[in-house]
Length: 438
Image 1 (spheres, rainbow, N blue to C red):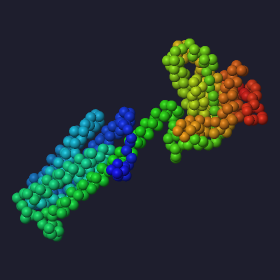
Image 2 (cartoon, helix red, strand yellow; image 1 turned 135 degrees about the vertical axis):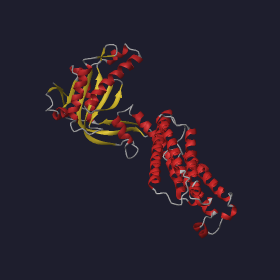
Image 3 (cartoon, rainbow, N blue to C red; image 1 turned 90 degrees about the vertical axis):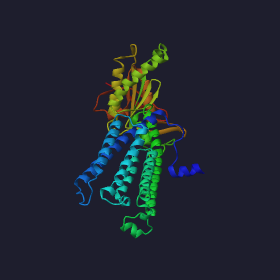
Image 4 (cartoon, rainbow, N blue to C red; image 1 turned 30 degrees about the vertical axis):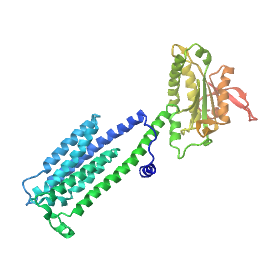
């Protein structure tokens, strides 16, 4: 019952222990919040100081003035906190002292009013300066830790209670206490109920803000986990695919996809099995990482998106995930440069990794396939199958880049193509012409 009530009030908690990297992200945000709080407080000091400087002092005011001292102390301590925040040093004890300092200076300033204006102590209980308490409580909400809001509210209640007791138990004694509201408003009297109302208001504001921050804190932690997961996702799939998945209006389901005209490039390393037989698993991984890094730079140069790795094979798309009006031309450029670079340099300890490429253009389906608990984001369709078949045909014809007729037609103004062969794909009655870019 208690857990259900807490979940209703504050939202669902984050299950388990937060990963260290997520905790580091949250701590960085909290540190940024402390810097923001410091700047807000400096602005408040400037505003209060300006108002004090331009406001003409009343003729009946005594010589005693605590405002310059209060503003000076508040400015100095705020500046120290801000410097500590920019030096990444904001321990809990410093924050607690800061809360006590904020409220303590404010309460001392309010207390001084009866001396400043030569009035009985009950005079300061009617000062509107008490409203600044709510500013200090609200400022603490900038940091996503409700305990500091509670500390500020508690310090304000203790401070105001002390001021009330000072009046009740002071020289004036019980004669200053009244139950008449009009007398309270028109004379230097104290109405206990009114002071209780003020403290209740502080308690309510503190509780509401604390509850709101707890809810926001739980949402923030879940968002931090989601953001970290999205960043990790970009290490396993391209950023474009990760953005497509994370920005979807609803959770992607098996079979979700859309048809569009796009271009695909299949790549495969020539005689890679022979190369891998001579290498240890660690050496093989290092060479592949170097190879994929070099190829990835080429793919990024022309706006391609890698949607699939399988061993040494890559499936690259153009206009499937990100818009590209010249996708066919960019696919051919990518394939030709991959073949050129892979055939002109070595990887690892002098290994040549010549690469064959198959390029095809047509209507494909972009989306998720698999079971509901495990999905793969990929492209599929006849045109994709033709692209894979074109890559394999390179071995038969001694070529390194072959393109389908749709791609060649779309790139007729880019370069010349020589016919190589024709291939009939399962499910089609008409053969597809295969060409080689010259």
